[in-house]
Image (cartoon, rainbow, N blue to C red; front, side, top):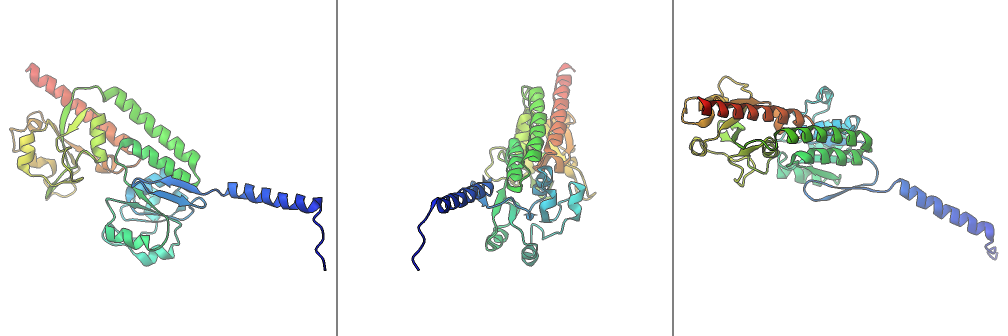
Length: 307
């Protein structure tokens, strides 16, 4: 049988199919974002099953409106309260890869500094898109919210959260940014003695408040330092976390060193490490507390000069 000659209806039908295919492809356009390691992460559709590999990532996902899409999380993912009921897939020491596979994620968000190279290599072999999260500046928290919202299809909620966070930081910068400089030692742990360098997000918080990290120039992100090095730097303020164990001296270890400026002026302050060092929207609260305590140190400086 000879093929029928193509008529006007044939061409109309063909064009209609092409138009519908084009519109359909536009409606399901790939989502592409750049992660904190500089990699391009591409998703064909918004992620519906996400595994969070760090506590700060869990907080960011909830704040970005994606809490219902988290199917698994790393240990210590305890905020917001709903995060405590998430299935755990491991710790910073070990991941249960079989459980990860069983949860059928379509996106993995890992913490470059908190997850080991071995763990990340295991996850890469699964063939699931991986986003590396490593906020180093305060504004990176806002950028993370926006990127997560884009990947999860919750852009409106994420953008609102980012705006609220940025407004809080802008108000703090306007209040404290121009204040006299205060030299700071930030103590992460006392046995052994650990601090943070200038590349860590906590140092960015210190800078916003008009402070200077005395070990900011060190190359290691979380270096071990000696008591002698702290004494030689003679910081005006020492920050440390809350004392959870009576066996840990915390910032009290500095009280016998009366030559320290921070001891002379009673500028040994505790800070909530979860608010200040966990890179989520609650950092705005942690930075507020940090700025207020640096301002106390400035007032004490003035009082010591008048006595």
